[in-house]
Image 1 (tube, each protein chain N blue to C red):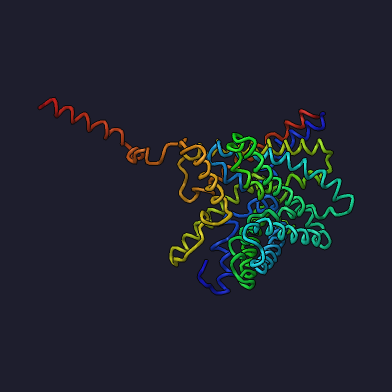
Image 2 (image 1 turned 120 degrees about the vertical axis):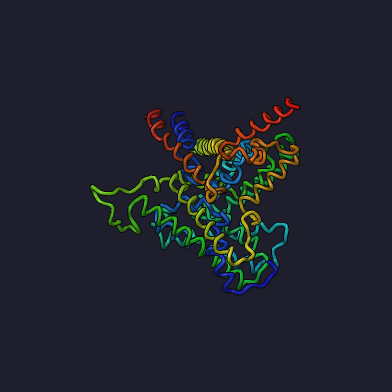
Length: 276
Length: 196
């Protein structure tokens, strides 16, 4: 992250290229829990964006004051205070939305996106760039939540912002309840991740750029689990693999008639040996 | 007694922490590559969940609520959880080395696991009594373990499956989670019939 980039780049990278929800897989809990309607998704996205923007600004301002060793507790305290302010504001001005989102507003505190951006970006960049980064990431998160929320509302409840879809009729098509349930959330999210990944690969294969892959991202699922894997190995010695390695299956087996060919070869050999 | 059992079973099966409340989804997707890691993480979560409830419950109802500082719960709880995890880790490392070996490495991951903070907030929101809050925490932890164990088993099987290229990796994992989540929906009638 040493290279200087334009302000426009910092603002737009969060939307597709490093989309926090669909590419980096950060903040999955609120993404699945509150996206039963487009309005809730949008509300949650905007609430998270506000916290992300402010926490990036505050942490960037304090980056030279906070000692290196206790930075994580310090960040968590800053984020928790911002979330508390937001929660009180929402109770005052957006009571219904606050009731719908429930405990997921206070849980923005432990959303990995916010701590992840603080650790990966605000920590080492000036206030203006950090603010742009927070805003861009927030917009990406909001768009993803809005997309999932809209799809789940249209498919699961047959409405969009409370307006009934024209094809939902008494004796006609009925809404697919499964998409309003947790299972539909998981499935739809999986499909969206697959599509975004495909688009991203397609788009950036033509214009190669350095992207932060999910595996290298600080605070991401894979980074943390890899740390766990490494440590388990140290404690227990090398892991035994439970499933056979991919190259343990010879590639010829996948082709039709592979076994027949194999059986023939030694047979011919033995015959030629007998003839000798 | 019936009330406690009702809380326990409904939290384990119906309001399952991961599959219907969506708390701790990060670790659910990240740490279920094999059964061993999934179980280690689950045991650590149950342990921390019980201790955190025992600490945060009195703090809220005896200190914060009487003086009207209830809105500070998020800040206070997250700090309490973070320090409890730190103290617990140091204590277990010194006092019970085998236990540390089994679950010590998962402890630092728990601070930012939204399951713990989420359950603390739910316990306060539902205004449970202390025993009921402990029961709900235990149920949440056991439910988390059940979901992690089932899903880790599913994923070990999935490694042998031939998955279309564009669904490989996380997308197929999420689809499997959807199917496991459907299977939990079947428990809805069980509780109603058991407890009337």
